[in-house]
Image 1 (tube, rainbow, N blue to C red):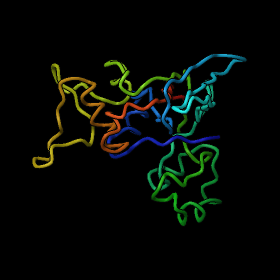
Image 2: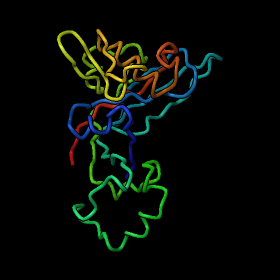
Image 3: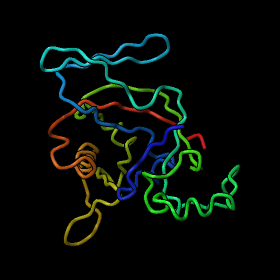
Length: 197
């Protein structure tokens, strides 16, 4: 089983576990003129045209229908409550591993929560709709305002307020992917999912 990481600093893992985030965009590495998608034999296939005029196959990390473990650092889990895992047998393994503090190094089979990929799309990052921004973890804050957990004003440390969902998502994606990610407008795989465990 594969695993997927969501950013904790901006509350995205919690948003998934609370069923508020049901979509994630993952950048496709490389520069492409165009990317085409077609469905055959029950799977999506993606062909990218490079600037040199070549065509290459780009593969998503996950496939439609796949169950994927939500990565969490071992120290954040309630181990005795995890069904089907013999806590006593793996205590030394997990407490002395890099995964104790860093979810990049955890084993998928030890994770208590899973999502199922229900759809895969392909688009440019800036093609995101306001509705999809909310599915990505942007929160409504008040009448006509939005926010993202963890994004604060530098001096007051109060939550930063945005006037459109896209403004909030733009700020979020630049925090996660690095400054200029939004402006670069890369191709992204859009994974739509549901929490199943």
